[in-house]
Length: 222
Image 1 (cartoon, rainbow, N blue to C red):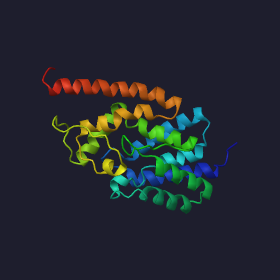
Image 2 (tube, rainbow, N blue to C red):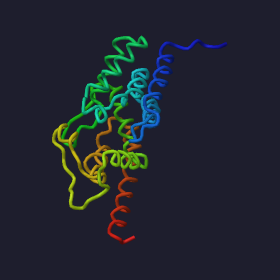
Image 3 (tube, rainbow, N blue to C red):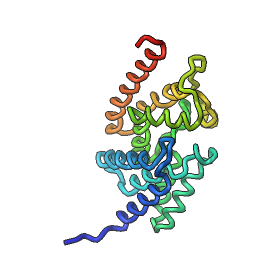
Image 4 (tube, rainbow, N blue to C red):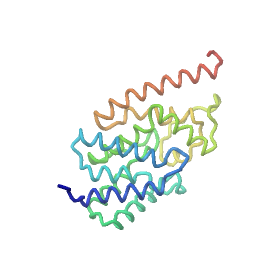
């Protein structure tokens, strides 16, 4: 017996194709493969958190569809494009509102800026996105984005900045190594779910080991 696909599964299939078409080949670490990893991780976390999987999947798939970093700093670009797409494929208004709210509040906005989620689904997607900024892949993505922004890899004379506002964070121009201290090493303690915290611990430790090796090589002692 063959089961007919549900409306929700059809929406996911359409959204996968849409996002893959938009983000494939992107070179800053915000590509389709990043989205795919966040999507898969979000589903994994959602299963242990009893979250609404449709909302989680759609938000994870669309979370970087028009990232403010590539939209002239426009924070509304992402939720606007997500809403337009979801309306186009006939998703119900309540789900659209929930997905767009998650996208609005998802991003890290600076060490001194609270970016908490109000729903379980938002917490799941935020955790999944932040996990992809940690570990070996997080390191690779940091240097890919740093190269795109023409940032120095490291400059001992340039110290990390504790950004107190989103505007300061958006306009920051520090080195890629400073980005570890300004964001990446802070993410472990921002995880919302127990599942994500366990994964983050291991990935965080790997980044700390990378930095120890980096500084040793920089100083010529290895």
